[in-house]
Length: 333
Image (cartoon, rainbow, N blue to C red; front, side):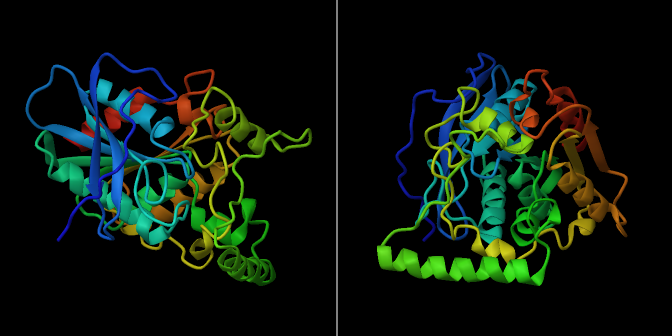
């Protein structure tokens, strides 16, 4: 029997952004095909009737729905879409044990489970469903779009390919057999240490205090996750981080193998000042290379925007929400 777990959900407003008076907010639960119950925030535009186009939102990798995925969801609901921001398996308010684990397969399934939930919701037009993935979940969103034919439109915002960065390091600086072997050996040793200690060692979230010689992208993360701007007590990146072995399988299981077979619409957007911009550029290039479905694909490069500027807009309101509304309005028609 498919049955959801009873989760302990926080009912008060505990987001990193103010509550909008233009939408109705409620907490929901749904289940993925592994039997893990996921927690979500549902946003419905006030004053609407009947079935609406819907969008599922998740990310960044190591964040929770009370941070920028919730901001995206609420803002898109203000523009007429029914939206769902959710916590992935093993994190936030969602179920799954052990905690703070990640999986290319299970996390792709989380997005598909969100589409299941929206498809069966009484206020949703099941033929008009899209997804938004932010940071590491941008890569997961593309991976899901390549698998789930129900998705009509996808946005990957300030995306990471988590399999690439785990296997090759930042900027592909560790792309060698020797470097990967060292990572694998360290992970295997850590597995035994965890079993001997009886608990999983955390890898640590965003570094705190911030070193004086920290590179720009580390400062960018610190400014979001470790300050009132984006800190949340349930966020992995704001606190202890993933388990050291939490992302082990990413080293050996690349995603995006069939991204050039995505038939539905995709918008990849990135800031040109983001350290991660190469992920978005390369993912877009791979998606359209040899593809028969390029007319509905777009790469949007936002001048001057850093990686975390597309989390909450930064100081310049960098997230092009009007563009997103137009994109989904066209392809969820």
